[in-house]
Length: 222
Length: 254
Image (cartoon, rainbow over all chains, first blue to last red; front, side):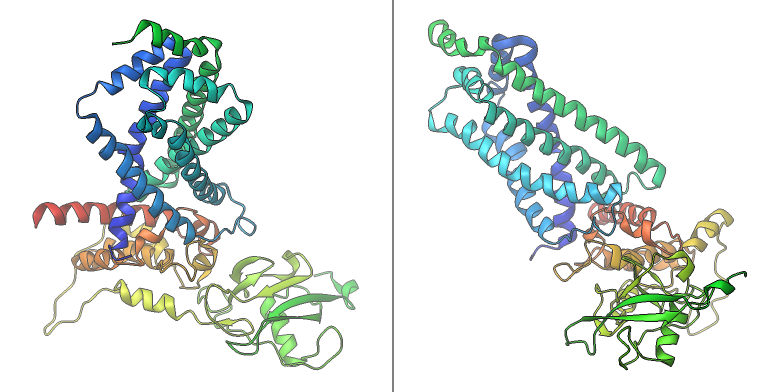
């Protein structure tokens, strides 16, 4: 690496929490509208997001560039780590290994998920109005449902445990008690965000979403 | 000690050996006559006295390093039954038998159980783990240290550069240049000292260079393994905070 690794590592840590963590929360809440508000609720979220000003730049700077840097540099960091939970089977050492493992899973999952959804929109195969029915197709296939659930749980662990590590790496939680408390809070965040994504999948699985394509075609949203 | 009934007992040692830095490692087993209260060092001394392995063959005596024999010098660190620790404080009565010994392979192995811990001493030089007091004239006494700070700083000063934390750390390996937990904790110690603090920025700069503090991945094995109970992860997080504040101060004032 040509860049001084201190800065690269700090940027990696910051990007994981600031743009990407915020994006994850936004994504979880927007998807959850599919469970809470059904097709109409979800469509409102989609429309709201796509009507944001400078949406291209928001996506570029809050999602695409941070994900690329965080993902690729993260692979390099995982490559630099040994796994020694056999000798040191402590909870934090397991979390260290899981952080790297869930990072790899998330890398593959995000790539695949991007291809299945956002990339199809870019190609014009799926319109914003058809996203609900598109997601219904994905969520109603048991294999897809399972893989998406695993991907979401892994990604949320990576985020929640990464948030814990962020607090340590920036010198915010210093002592062992502070780190224990923040670990509990972060594991709570993992459970809550995972639940939101799984409930969204359950929401998309609802037959109502199969009809949204028809509604969109007939009812012409904007 | 009422251990007279155990006269004929022997303790099996399984030792990972190597004849030179480049030669292949191999295992050799030894049966050591049991004595009450023996430690791993006294067993190794027994092999030195009578270098005969479990098959009854004469062999090269196993070599190791040790000095103080009271867990303060750090020289006799080795992997005992899977965990790195000091051989002098590893009591045979408290270990699972057979007892397995191997060198701390995070470091270059010199021969048998002897490793080269030079990288740790180089790391201490890199972070300037000392307090410069020399001048061309008498500088007089330095500022006093608050008692509460002295108390935790004393804990950090117990570090004996034994290498156990580096051996336990999954990020100290040949794919990474991570300096390891010990030197980071020493930066906290010397930056906490009122005279040492005058050079705090030099130590922080050293840890912000490649192979510095950024290599920590928070597995926290170091604090679980440290034989002196040094709060290494607290030191790392505290120095993380110091480097963060230093980074912003530097950006905003330059």
